[in-house]
Length: 422
Image 1 (cartoon, rainbow, N blue to C red):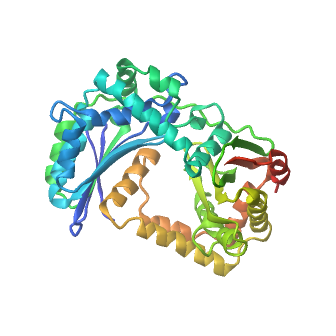
Image 2: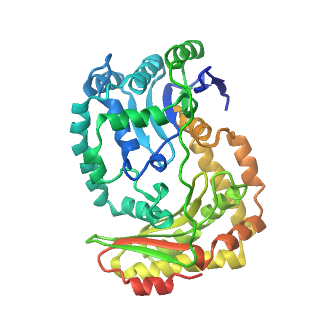
Image 3: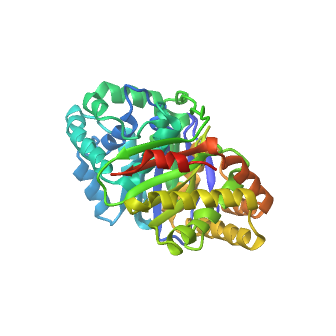
């Protein structure tokens, strides 16, 4: 993978990854802020602000003007807000790369933030909030992080609270924009088929006036856990969804490669231990998966299951048994090799198109301030030994690190708590 990185005089970072054979081009603009940089009073503003960027500029006065231009060439476009970064992107036929850059740059740099549009969008966000409440498979993941990080910005919902959404005014958005959308906190990434000369000239011209300065610091993650913790939300659902997992490492930890392999052994693919034990041998769940998440100063590994209400305890017991087993017995050479090839294969398949590459490069730059290429990642995965996996499993799979969040109508909290031990 070839890319070039340029830093403008004001501090904006530019990543250009031309791919001569690519039929598409992707423009991605990232800023290193999200819900963990918010306060109790403005929780939800990062996500709300993301919506308002699409409500019109002087050049493209309405959402319809923005959408029509990109729709007219069959483009895909959207935005996203995370806990530590926010992104705006468009993917188009390579011959329309210049237009995509112009549109996404325009909304990012020149959004009007009209009070009437802010008022109108409140209702849409509140409906989005309620939609997620009716999606237990998604909501349980948010509740798991609520449980882990408590009443801190990292533990709050990205979408915020309904009370905050109803109160936010234009000056709140402008103040947050001035604090967080600073030059040193912005990455512009273009990948695929495009003219490097024209693209760089455009970016230099249009992004040079963004004021310098860094985002404000975030509140550190809370990690005061001394015993297993649970959170149960009683709700009428067709399935009970639960996430069970443990605290792990931050995104800079050298142990993250062994953790990735461990996660693949447990829940990566249809031949993984948990898929085999929970679904294939016992038929307890259709969905069962294990994954790892990390932030600047925290991380976790968790397993997500959707089960019949009466099978919660059975499925939970199987998951915890597999956690214990890998910590005590480790992993054999054949399974270790398979897991490493799985991880490397997923990495390769995740870099097939221009948007994949833009996200891969841009996310690393905005979150880690450095880029590790796929070849280097693959080499580090190859260096993971069976002992490394076992050591990490022994370190993290402890009762005092266990957490469980669940949504369902009749979960027995006492029984679940009794099971929650390693």
